[in-house]
Length: 166
Image (cartoon, rainbow, N blue to C red; front, side, top):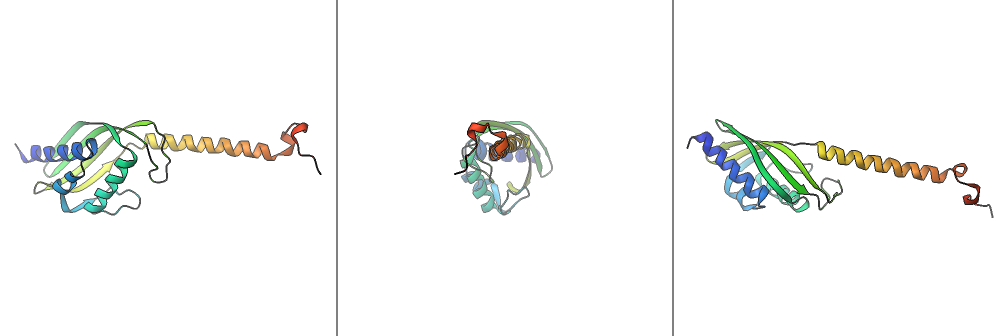
């Protein structure tokens, strides 16, 4: 097997084990101690331990129900992986309340491999589902605010619902 094929196999195993199966021990096995995460979540540090903690929190809040690697390309020490995942939002993540619905995204990871270990990761995510959810939340808030404004305007109420002075 060529080194590009070996690198693809390492990344494939890494992604399937920790994302699809929730096996976080694979991080200690396949990720180098000096690993750097280049796609940090808010409040996350760049180290392997920070990455492991962040993955555990995300998988707890949004367990993955389906994970498929759609394409992998390797050249030299770099592996690019396009994948599709489905997950259910059970808990708040980064201040976004859970929808309880299953969401599906297509994302890309770029990994760098050295000595059979993953030394670097960059993630490029599909933000559309999150943006759609936030837009829905904003519309709902605007509707509630409008309802409150209407309630506060005495002239908008029928005369029998207006408060009578004491």
